[in-house]
Length: 236
Ligand SMILES: *Cc1c(COP(=O)(O)O)cnc(C)c1O
Image (cartoon, rainbow, N blue to C red):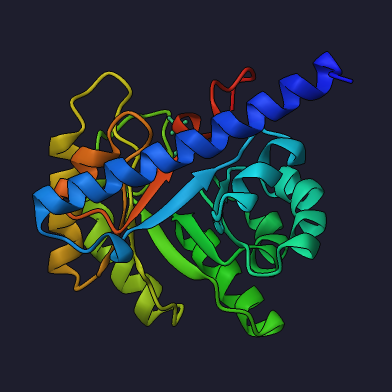
């Protein structure tokens, strides 16, 4: 009667639903502290590296917005998941190559990683061609880390203006990934400052370890993976 394999699956299912509920409570608590409306925070459940079988229970628990960091991985997983959940919304949170711009525009509802003119131009062309307009975030490399994607903070104003004026792109907001070993709050504050002076309402910042701090500093989109799905066995 009790197949140990099925038990393990059922336990995993219950665990991710409980973790999702806990994250939602923590978002509500942070909003209460900040005097903000939790309904205005978009929780992006980062499902990168997790198979569809791990995503189904999180959809069943009511989550609708998901984040993936690779176009190809998302193309393999999501068409089928979307058949069972047509209102699922997909956000690209990983680096984008210009030769993947068409696929990205076709598949994603938001792209958080616009960070150079070549990508902005490719996205503008594909959005015109496909008649689809995903929300766009400009990624800012707030820690000026050489290995990390994103426009440098001092170049952000000019790049945002270029996206708007030269490429005709509507920009929703900014995104950052603070250095792994740094206190995140100053990076969140810097991102909020750049957004404010460019009249951008969206702030994609905060991950499993620091989404509450990000909400206190104005995050509108938090990208939470392991706190919902559990430990990621493979490097992402
Ligand atoms: C993996 C990833 C996340 C989620 O990280 P967790 O620590 O698992 O919450 C958020 N943002 C980006 C850009 C990521 O690549």
